Every structure is written in C-alpha cells, then in structure tokens.
Image (cartoon, rainbow, N blue to C red; front, side):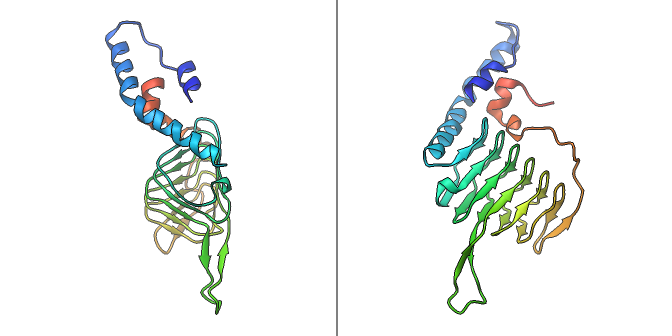
Amino acid sequence: MFTYLWKDRLKLPFGSKVWFKQWAKRFWTLPSMLGFSWRVYRLKLRGTQIGEDSVVSRIQLGGKPRLLQIGSNSFIGRVDIQLQANVGIGSNVCINDGVKLITASHDVRDAKWKQFAQPIRIGDHAWIATGAVILPGVTIGRGAVVGAYTVVAKDVPNYAVATGNPVNIRDNVRNCELNYSPTRFLAFQAAWLGSPK
C-alpha cells in the first residue's frame, strides 16, 4: 500500500500553501493508514488471502480465517463474518459497517437440528450497504447493490439492486461500465492521491 501511495501521490509545488495542507492531511491520517495495514498483515498471517491495496477495518471473524478471500482495491468495514464455509469477496467491493456474512445455519426441518454450511460469493464492484445480512449459499453478482439492513437469502444477479426484508430485487439497475475503487474515497488515500473526481 505504501509503495502505491508514494508512487502515485499527488505532487504539488514544494513549499506552497496547498503543499503544506496536503502534507498535514498525510500526517493526520497516518495512524489510520498504519492500522489498516497492520490488520491486513495479521489476517494474511492467519491464512486470509487479500489482494493488493484492499483496506480492512476492525472485523469480527468466527471460524477459520483461511476460508476468507478478498480481491484487490476492496474496502471491508466493521463487519461480522462467520467462516464455516468459504467467503469470496471480489475486487473493488465496498462492504459497509454493520454487515453480517453468515455461512452456516441449522435445518429447521431436521429433527436433530443439524447444522449446514454454504459459501458466500460477492462479485467485483458489488456494494453491500450498512447493516445488511447475507445468508448461507448466497451469491451477490458483479456490480450488484444490497441496500441498508436488507436480509438476502437468495442470489442477487449482476448489476441488480436488492432492498428490504423480504428482499425485493430489481434487475439491471446499475451502470455496467463500473470503473472505480472504493478505497479511493478513504481519507488517507485522498490525502496522498487527491480527492476522486
């Protein structure tokens, strides 16, 4: 992350007012950048696969960290991820605070209330908004959006928007030519690279 930010940093006239302002922002956001980097490093030590320049907040993991894969340039907020089965998160994904990814549950029809586990897959450029709950076996398609506090028990197609409980899915809502990185909207990235246009 540091190499990328330094190489692509916004270069301003040395000693100018905007130069001092930009460097002040860089020093101000340094602790959060170090915290994000430390969390990614620790998760990788525990077996999680994380792509380049992804940013991970203070997440709660239940189960085996090696079952989690995160692509490049994704932002993972303060989420709760239960890892009894694989969770695959694509690149350029934004998962906001309060989201729950649940890979296991119990079969209510079974007399012994057996547990089952199924993987969750989240496609590139998907956005999972605050407080959403993704249940076992669900695939969130490329560019799909899951609205705040939505409970998703079935697949969401590419570029669709899912809202409500029970979930209501509207197909082909988003632009199919998505070209952004959610990490660019973070304060420490904007301090180094400039605000996204």
